[in-house]
Length: 88
Image (cartoon, rainbow, N blue to C red; front, side, top):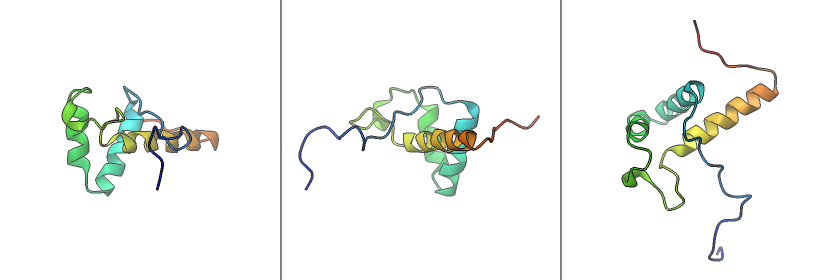
């Protein structure tokens, strides 16, 4: 059983960006759609950022994980030399 108290920093997820880029948001939406949760994801991101119905005790929104992981994926791609750009 884990002791009471704040979660150790190395276990805590990084905060989701307050204003994710269009590429991050598109990747997060794609990920949510694979999980069958696109409508819920869009509902949360269309709601006001401080909407109490979607906030967790740690200050994150329910679906921030998609945005956090999308950012991490793009960061890792960039470290490998790839750049994601919108189609023109």
